[in-house]
Length: 193
Image (tube, rainbow, N blue to C red; front, side, top):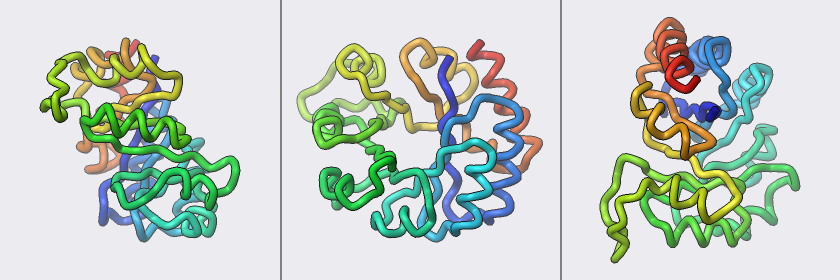
């Protein structure tokens, strides 16, 4: 059964993120959370105490080290993964959002990414790649490192992705309040069983 990959909304108050994450972790098997620039060490520690691996999006490696976060989630091409890997603590994770590009995923894997992310719903042809097979399914036949569908999904969509993916990103409605997080995550859990 896939584990859940949480992505906190940019600009949300740390207390709100923590409350919703706490409810989510109580309702389902959550593996990790992506935070954005501006996260604090206290926020990272509180989320780690819930059992979440905390990844910071698109920051310099020194910020990951300073916050004692678990790794870096890269969404831009301005970071070279090989250079990042050299600058991060040895046990830090590095993941790459590859959009719909198979080529970017292959490059990220070669450069030492711990996971690749695809924009699962955006099934637009990438260059001359017009194969409509879900990208996570294609990747899992090819590679050992996990693929994460990075578009938030409903419970019904999650059930369709579950056989092909190690991770699922829940609907962003989960961040409205803790009750929403509980309801959405429990619904997702039921569909994934």
